[in-house]
Image 1: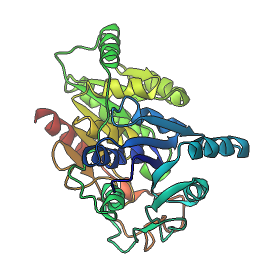
Image 2: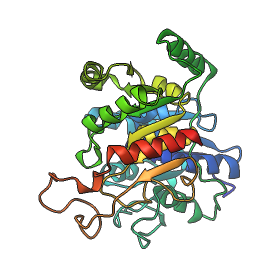
Image 3: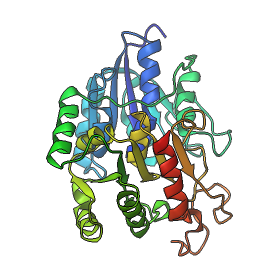
Length: 341
């Protein structure tokens, strides 16, 4: 262990998965002081690791890189001469990358026995609903490191906080009233509660209970933001960078989201969070030991997933979405309860 001075952590997944990978970085930094730590992630996930004092360098990879791009990235990484490479959530793409990286030791966190090109075998013999955080931390346990803190973390600068405060003043958001941030979109149909239900919920929060609702969108979802403005009077909307959205989320009294990246961001920032979960195991992305306080997970146990919960049973895509059949009335009631806490 004393010979390990330079570590590379690879997390090539979505925004939420990037957030859930931060406890590994935290524990390495805490338990292996003086080690240089770098991160490889998709370009869209880089903001999750920005301003993290534990990370020396963030290397971004396009979602679908050209062969020349990938070759140049591999060449750059090999020049760094890493002692240890930890691939969190090994899939085909990341496994191919780690195969080409030169390092003294390599760890692949298993994804259905995909542990090729590894010096350390983690194994996939565990409960199907073991949390993603615990699976990531198993990479450290396998080499004798006992994690001390598994809470995710995101770091916001003072400048970003000031920007969020200026945005709220400009939009005339009243600091004396409760602010609920919503993220009513998701790339996966099986995690989409539905825009109409979000509009219904926000309408009642604004008109019936006097709260303020802010919807945050990336620029690629600007068309949805315009649709929301047209259908919902009194809604505040932000369309912009992820770091700006992170700063705004940090000012919220409550975050309401599908099971997607922003809900993990709000949880990491210790903001009360209400999640509308679709067809998935309850604990995989919501470690029950972490998310028990200040959060609530709307969840339905449904019989229409295959044995390994890797996909919905036919017809796929599902037409009924019984896993997301959470009523607006129930979500409103729980939202108000969290706001009162």
